[in-house]
Amino acid sequence: MHSIEIVLTMLLLVIASGYVVRMLPFALPLPLVQIALGAGVAAVSDHGVVLDPGTFFLLFLPPLLFLDGWRIPKEGLFHDARAILQLAFGLVVVTVVGIGFLVHWMIPAMPLAVAFALAAIVSPTDPVALSSITARVPIPRRLMHVLEGESLLNDASGLVCFRFAVAAAMTGHFSLVSASLTFLWVALGGIALGALVAYGISKLHVGITRRFGQDSGLPILVSLLTPFGAYLAAEHLGASGILAAVAAGITTSYVELTGVALASTRVQRAAVWDSVQFTLNGIAFVLLGEQLPGILAGAAASVGQSGHLNPWWLLLYALAINVGLALLRLAWVWISLRMDRAAARRRGEKASRPPWRLVVATALAGVRGAITLAGVLTLPLLMPDGSAFPARDLAIFLAAAVVLLSLAAASFGLPRLLVGLEMPPEPHHEREEYLARRSAAKAALAAIERKRQDLPAGDADEAEILASAATRVMALYQRRLGDGDTGIDAGRLRKADEAERALRLAALRAERSEIFALARRHHLSDDLARKLVREIDLVESRYQS
Image (cartoon, rainbow, N blue to C red; front, side):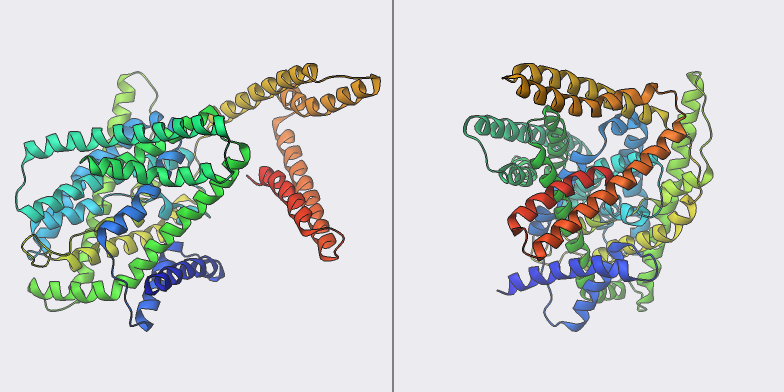
């Protein structure tokens, strides 16, 4: 019963954070509100939450990483692969080495292996935390793709480095040759197993449902369990469950292109996954706030062991780590851009210098979030000999401080850097969307014509009704095909589309209000009202996307 009460309390705090963040008179990132609520509960409650690191890792990471892999734009991932790989792997290695030695130099009481583990776990960035900051500030599309791709891969690389560092701290031994061979199996095996599990589950599901049918909620449950299956299978075979979850998400995104899933299933599944993502990230940050008092007390004790009796040294350590992370990231971004421009000039391509504000924004956008929190909380409680894991509370506190300070710095700095920043237009994406819509419209017209010929015409009246229905449906797609050849100014067309959208939304909202009114007056049954409102909601969602 106590565990159920804890879970319900966490969920209530996540719900409350969604209200509070909108009620505040000033903009504040949602994760900071959730951390504050968790700390507030810890301050008034005598019952703390005892977290099992392995359970926490299993429950939080697979679905979050799976969703990252599923939803990231693959074209942007491959188009900017060079920049993404430089950030996701090169910067992670530099961060682990540089910040690891910095932490060990500042805090000699923290073993070097533990310092490397701390540096590894603060290296992954979190796009969810970043999106909560940039929700009200437009961020360049390409920059967002790079940040999402970086986060997708550095989650895996940072956590794998974290795993090796913890193993070295537990055993006291580290072999570069053995670690390199192990990394190859951990990385390649994890990717292969994740892809295999996701592909196998999808094929099995499609084969069974095609023969025997399915319930509407079954595909959604299958998608929710897939990341856990991939993660557990990889971990059982000694590979990376982290990379397996990412690979399963990417594989699922490609399997989805077969179009097997029903339209209603895709709509419902997207809503369920949005809720899962919001809930898991929210609970992670609420738990961070709830753990802060105990973490702070343990960290103060660790500071005393390092020879500094003043607990204000904790703040100094946290600031030093954040400054080090920011400077490393800024230097890496600047050097990478110079190398890319030099390579472009050697190829004879025009290489324009990016605005300095964009460079600083890229460095400042390295926001840490739920992955850092979930990983650092998995530090073992005890060493193999039964003694306490060295500087565990201090490492957790410093990781939590990195999350808080990076969120605060980005929430203050990014809006000021991005507001008014003019980026070159991206006609490629507009042209791509235009051609895709035209191609889809042509396919739709051909399908309508085939279907009209297949339907029995019957007598003259039925034939006229069929022809009229086909004409009305075909008119929608013919208009889409004609939009590109009207000769009308593009600006006027956009204004016309915006006006039509506003009129359609007004009409749909009036329809829904009238249906609700009829149901309240008992002129319409509630089940029929729900059906009609759902139809209106689906149409309205098209114009709000």
